[in-house]
Image 1 (cartoon, rainbow, N blue to C red):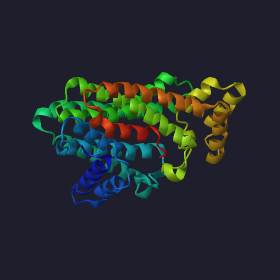
Image 2: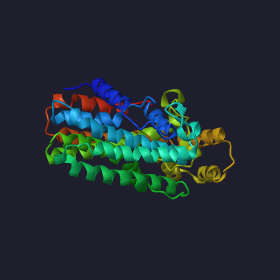
Image 3: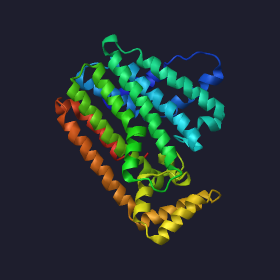
Length: 324
């Protein structure tokens, strides 16, 4: 069985060894840049961990794991552009370091490269894997569109938010796990359990990310705290605030939403003070725990000895209690 650190090294070495066309450098340099920014490699490591549940070796799962990681970074590149974000993992975003057109085109090239990596899956597993990856790619786009649509609404429900998170974040984690199982010949029932495990872990992961965006430390989080507040993103915290706020608090929230010229630091502080008054940090931590427990229910049903699942369990726990 592989340790998480060994799998991280396999992924990092494989990314470093990726061969892109040499010209034009202006297309491929931003790709190399974003793939080098010290990512945690959560999704591709999940792919290899899932493969290792059913196979002693993981070489056959490296290409689909790379596809997952390249696609994920493609989505971040475009997401940063749409959000006008300045930092990613503590470094300048691609559209800031280069320009918006470069971010769009380099992102497009990354998407194509992701599908080229998926195409390397063995022929007997390719159709099933390709179909899942393609379905997931479209779901992530749907989730991103919902996220943008929600920015102009004040009536987003908790259920709508969870569905957006499922599509934007959780399905890619679930896909990473299921593909790892599929390429290792896992029984369908176990591959499906891993997918459901990934959905619940993914939702908990995004809820945690939303919480850290308000209450995290920018030095460890890798980007400016409060970005979601500045962009009027309808996170779980904001949705619950609108649900629980009294008239005075709701009017203040709406004032900050509608003031496009407001000072961002003042806005972050004011909105966070309302969250504190409504004890929303605790509320958010409780729902994160609920999704984690649902994930563990799926995890315990996977028909693999517990000792083989220990590294995957560690990975899940690291996500739950992360600070960045």
